[in-house]
Length: 321
Image (cartoon, rainbow, N blue to C red; front, side):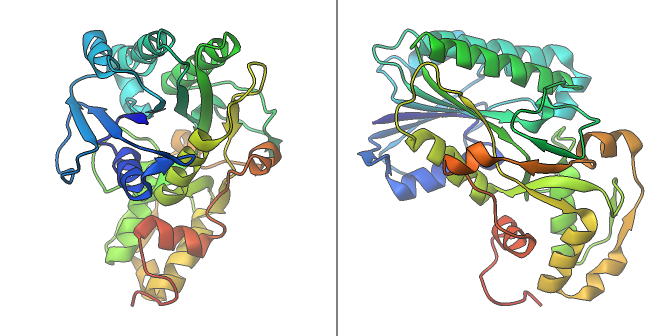
């Protein structure tokens, strides 16, 4: 089996690479080639299954070379994050929309329709959500990032309807815990809070203690991505977009879980200066019922304590004091 990961050098991408190399197979089919595509590909372990393709996803000729020997499964993760895409519309347009459409067009020309797992986003919903929602909630993106994600979802479903790809799109929530860095990700405060508390550092949170977000660890995200690829072949008319189950937690609940793990003293280093716009986009997430996704086998981390353990890669059962 030949597997491609775009955005393989990213936060989720690197963990997906490690998990697939460890697992060695998708749906009981051995992975013979794991193709990695990203602008930078540094620090990957030597493995005869790896094929590194360094370059931009916007390079159609590079994509053609990567796919020249065929492909069975594609995890399409690469994107310009929401904040960066909002500041530089042209960059987001080229990477998040046009490059995705070019990749899809080349995939539809494969001898056999490949399984295509697309990392979409909860940004498709926008702000001002109802107090309770489910998978039938309407989409109304309020960032260019979310608008482009929704367009790509539509293209994926259309090609699946035509039988040219076996597409599966997952709407991802905030994935934690990314290393602190200026990456243009508007929801980066979720990861920054976890790292700061764990390290005993001061941190000014840009949303209020009562602000609620949808959370998922990278470990749980990777498991869901692989599960999507391992679902049996879907009928052309089958719904192809899943809103993943999420943990809905307030900042205060996350602080309680952090205190339970690292001790209560760290609370004194955390302060709050809410940004009203940021909180409207990422700190006012309602209760979410994802029955269809759960029935399909997708899951969340379980509870706040497990989220902290998974996100910070901590051993089970002991406080990290």
